[in-house]
Length: 57
Image (cartoon, rainbow, N blue to C red; front, top):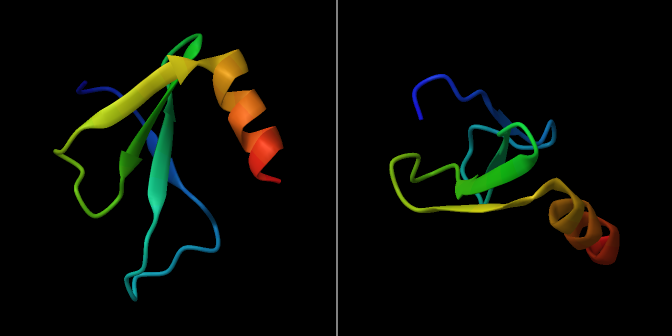
């Protein structure tokens, strides 16, 4: 995934902590640990990600 643009929450800081990053994969959303950018990622359909975020709120 060379041309993927990863985004981190605006409230994340460089001081560490547990952060995730998300990327738009045309119809899907990828989620990864910001501290391990070369590690595994979770890829889900956009509607599934939206439901997850709504449930988390």
